[in-house]
Image (cartoon, rainbow, N blue to C red; front, side, top):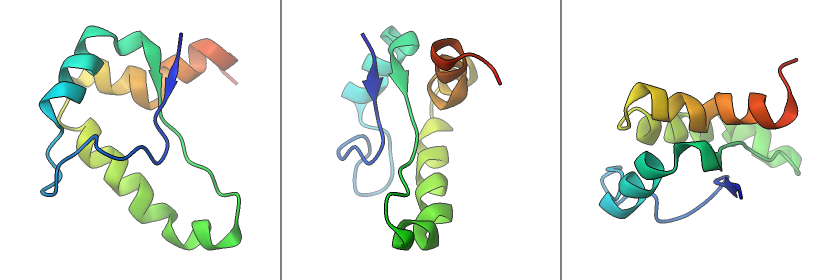
Length: 82
């Protein structure tokens, strides 16, 4: 089972801190999550740098191996490395 995290609310608090519940979930099941973005409308491209910066901010609060799995390694495993 996989959990896709694009545009998911509640992962961080108002100050950008990773919520304790999400941290525990990510650290316990690091092989089950993916992150990505969706540029389904042109306006999304204008906000893309901010969207990615937000993802990187909370990923940086996780152990490196966990963050890398969520950021790209799980996607490589699921879709194959191109």
